Image (cartoon, helix red, strand yellow):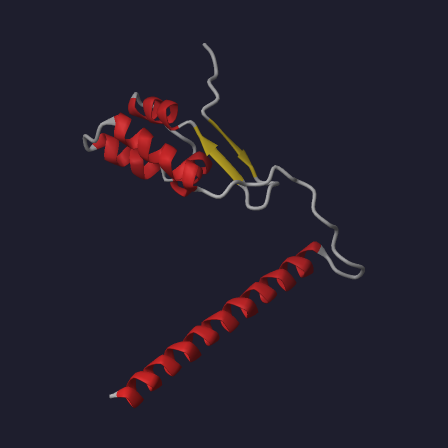
Length: 130
Protein backbone atom coordinates (compact mmCIF):
# COMPACT_ATOMS: atom_id res chain seq x y z
CA UNK A 1 0.00 0.00 0.00
CA UNK A 2 0.90 3.64 -0.19
CA UNK A 3 -0.25 6.96 1.15
CA UNK A 4 -1.25 9.71 -1.25
CA UNK A 5 -1.12 13.31 -0.08
CA UNK A 6 -4.39 14.88 -1.20
CA UNK A 7 -4.09 18.17 0.64
CA UNK A 8 -2.61 20.06 3.54
CA UNK A 9 -3.73 22.01 6.57
CA UNK A 10 -1.53 24.61 8.27
CA UNK A 11 -3.20 26.20 11.30
CA UNK A 12 -0.17 28.42 12.00
CA UNK A 13 -0.72 30.83 9.10
CA UNK A 14 -3.19 33.67 9.48
CA UNK A 15 -5.75 32.78 8.22
CA UNK A 16 -5.11 29.04 8.34
CA UNK A 17 -4.07 27.35 5.10
CA UNK A 18 -6.34 24.61 3.73
CA UNK A 19 -5.39 23.19 0.35
CA UNK A 20 -7.10 20.21 -1.28
CA UNK A 21 -6.22 18.44 -4.52
CA UNK A 22 -9.84 18.36 -5.66
CA UNK A 23 -9.49 15.77 -8.42
CA UNK A 24 -7.75 13.24 -6.17
CA UNK A 25 -9.97 13.92 -3.16
CA UNK A 26 -13.15 13.53 -5.21
CA UNK A 27 -11.76 10.33 -6.74
CA UNK A 28 -10.96 8.77 -3.35
CA UNK A 29 -14.30 9.80 -1.87
CA UNK A 30 -16.11 8.38 -4.92
CA UNK A 31 -14.45 4.97 -4.46
CA UNK A 32 -15.43 4.78 -0.79
CA UNK A 33 -12.76 6.57 1.25
CA UNK A 34 -14.17 7.60 4.64
CA UNK A 35 -12.72 10.89 5.97
CA UNK A 36 -12.32 11.42 9.69
CA UNK A 37 -14.53 14.04 11.36
CA UNK A 38 -11.64 16.53 11.34
CA UNK A 39 -10.98 15.99 7.63
CA UNK A 40 -14.70 16.19 6.86
CA UNK A 41 -14.79 19.59 8.60
CA UNK A 42 -11.85 20.76 6.49
CA UNK A 43 -13.59 19.50 3.34
CA UNK A 44 -16.72 21.44 4.30
CA UNK A 45 -14.70 24.65 4.84
CA UNK A 46 -13.04 24.32 1.42
CA UNK A 47 -16.30 23.43 -0.37
CA UNK A 48 -15.01 20.02 -1.41
CA UNK A 49 -17.66 18.12 0.54
CA UNK A 50 -20.48 20.04 -1.19
CA UNK A 51 -18.87 19.29 -4.57
CA UNK A 52 -18.62 15.60 -3.59
CA UNK A 53 -22.36 15.58 -2.79
CA UNK A 54 -23.01 17.03 -6.25
CA UNK A 55 -20.71 14.39 -7.80
CA UNK A 56 -22.79 11.68 -6.10
CA UNK A 57 -25.92 13.22 -7.66
CA UNK A 58 -24.40 12.89 -11.14
CA UNK A 59 -22.53 16.10 -11.97
CA UNK A 60 -19.38 15.43 -14.02
CA UNK A 61 -16.12 15.47 -12.06
CA UNK A 62 -14.44 17.71 -14.66
CA UNK A 63 -17.00 20.47 -14.04
CA UNK A 64 -16.53 20.25 -10.28
CA UNK A 65 -12.72 20.27 -10.50
CA UNK A 66 -12.82 23.29 -12.84
CA UNK A 67 -15.12 25.07 -10.38
CA UNK A 68 -12.71 24.32 -7.52
CA UNK A 69 -9.73 25.58 -9.51
CA UNK A 70 -11.58 28.79 -10.35
CA UNK A 71 -12.44 29.31 -6.68
CA UNK A 72 -8.82 28.69 -5.70
CA UNK A 73 -7.58 31.17 -8.32
CA UNK A 74 -10.04 33.82 -7.11
CA UNK A 75 -9.12 33.35 -3.43
CA UNK A 76 -6.78 35.77 -1.73
CA UNK A 77 -3.29 34.30 -1.35
CA UNK A 78 -2.35 33.34 2.20
CA UNK A 79 1.02 34.41 3.54
CA UNK A 80 3.24 31.46 4.48
CA UNK A 81 4.45 33.42 7.54
CA UNK A 82 3.97 31.54 10.76
CA UNK A 83 5.66 33.93 13.17
CA UNK A 84 3.89 37.06 14.33
CA UNK A 85 4.86 39.78 16.80
CA UNK A 86 4.64 38.72 20.42
CA UNK A 87 1.97 40.32 22.62
CA UNK A 88 3.04 43.44 24.50
CA UNK A 89 4.14 43.43 28.15
CA UNK A 90 1.35 42.27 30.43
CA UNK A 91 -0.71 40.98 27.51
CA UNK A 92 -1.35 37.30 27.13
CA UNK A 93 -2.04 35.84 23.72
CA UNK A 94 -5.69 35.51 24.69
CA UNK A 95 -5.91 39.17 25.73
CA UNK A 96 -4.11 40.25 22.54
CA UNK A 97 -6.54 38.20 20.43
CA UNK A 98 -9.51 39.65 22.35
CA UNK A 99 -8.18 43.18 21.83
CA UNK A 100 -7.72 42.55 18.10
CA UNK A 101 -11.25 41.12 17.88
CA UNK A 102 -12.70 44.10 19.75
CA UNK A 103 -10.85 46.50 17.43
CA UNK A 104 -12.18 44.66 14.37
CA UNK A 105 -15.73 44.72 15.76
CA UNK A 106 -15.44 48.44 16.51
CA UNK A 107 -14.19 49.07 12.98
CA UNK A 108 -17.08 47.04 11.52
CA UNK A 109 -19.59 48.91 13.70
CA UNK A 110 -18.15 52.25 12.59
CA UNK A 111 -18.38 51.20 8.94
CA UNK A 112 -21.99 50.06 9.42
CA UNK A 113 -22.83 53.34 11.15
CA UNK A 114 -21.25 55.34 8.32
CA UNK A 115 -23.20 53.32 5.74
CA UNK A 116 -26.45 53.87 7.65
CA UNK A 117 -25.75 57.61 7.87
CA UNK A 118 -25.04 57.78 4.13
CA UNK A 119 -28.23 55.85 3.40
CA UNK A 120 -30.28 58.16 5.63
CA UNK A 121 -28.74 61.20 3.94
CA UNK A 122 -29.55 59.78 0.50
CA UNK A 123 -33.15 59.11 1.56
CA UNK A 124 -33.42 62.64 2.96
CA UNK A 125 -32.07 64.11 -0.29
CA UNK A 126 -34.53 62.04 -2.32
CA UNK A 127 -37.39 63.24 -0.10
CA UNK A 128 -36.41 66.88 -0.55
CA UNK A 129 -36.31 66.46 -4.34
CA UNK A 130 -39.83 64.98 -4.41
